[in-house]
Length: 529
Ligand code: G4P
Image (cartoon, rainbow, N blue to C red):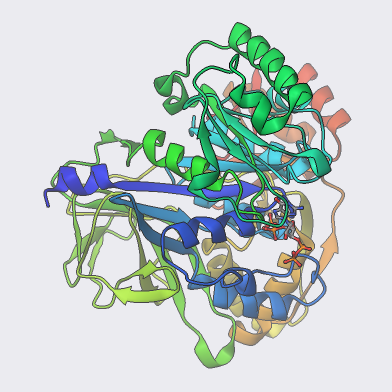
């Protein structure tokens, strides 16, 4: 098969949701359709228990297991689907943001009872920054949820996206009768406690005939006709290109646990989701079908079990063909590296790969050479961009409990933050170290690992900050600002200036008082507040 054919065959995506909306259940159904697993429950058993926040060792153990399922590849309708898993636990949200940089599209799961939840908003923000195409699946229609029109409005308002329903539910909860596929003009009937099959799909090109009445009854037929008329009046025909540009999100309704509406979603995904797309580096845009291989590391997993202390770097192939046992240029270290045992993932199995193509994710055993965002090429010096850091939510000062081990502590915290466990900031003009994380769990992980792996004992002192903003602007004004707000100014690992704000009020006040300074919410200075 030619490189072009390999690329056209691939779809690399992630399923994202607020915890409990049904991501794991939907993943499992996709894998069942793809024949990658045979039994329900196979994915579930690997899932990080969402509520076990106190026991991080247990979570790490489960994370260890979940490395095997970090990427799930399966074939469906002659396509090769790479589904990148994202951790459900809120404290690992940074992991999810980074994974989103390695996909070409996303399926977002919404619980119809709860609507748009907090984590959904943050995840969608990341998707919008990158114009990632998003398909929305409104799940749990077998429960009494919000009115579908209200849900669409909530999605548009809270997520700041344009939506277009491609399927439409007939009632919900106890009265849920099924979904009407607007695109294909067919009805999928729902029967409680019974899995939907293709035989339950009835073609209904004209809703004004009596057929629909026979299927759902007079009253629901009338409502469906009315609602369809409304929808037809509001929406133009679906524009795939607008979806691919990230401007329009098609919406499906269904029930993952009942395997209802899932096939429809997967079929549409296969039809419309983009194959591997071009990606930006600091010097130029790289097309997937360029002959020469290039790719970047978007995730590093370190096993903290002392009996299996290994690190795996996850590399997304962006162009050309990646080959086993071939030297590639590690552009940050300016040295050639090669891998004798790279592996890919078929469902739960890890397989050594000889070659991999754009869209594929390769697991590379790493002895500490990699940090998040590192680029490998066939010789060209370039760096893939677009893996910025976002503001952490919790800030603590790192306190050294054993002055004899200062060096170990410094080395340890640098390496752990290279892996992306947390962000490290250093006091501007000083040496105080401030760690920023998304969740409390990370601090426990850091403390444990520093002691176990580097022999360095530490503790943390809570700091009153709520947000980090990267700042840039007129040199003199920035210098004045630094002098004025000295105790709030730190540097990230790239020595970029960062302002730590105690509250939204402080942040807004400083922005008002310093119009010549730009405040950015990402470390790449691309997204201004
Ligand atoms: P997550 O990965 O997004 O966190 O969600 P997950 O799939 O684990 O689903 C969360 C809960 O919602 C699960 O129940 C799951 O069975 C349920 N669920 C998923 N899809 C549907 C649906 O279409 N309808 C209904 N009614 N429930 C759904 P649980 O009690 O937490 O787990 P379990 O004991 O059922 O495994």
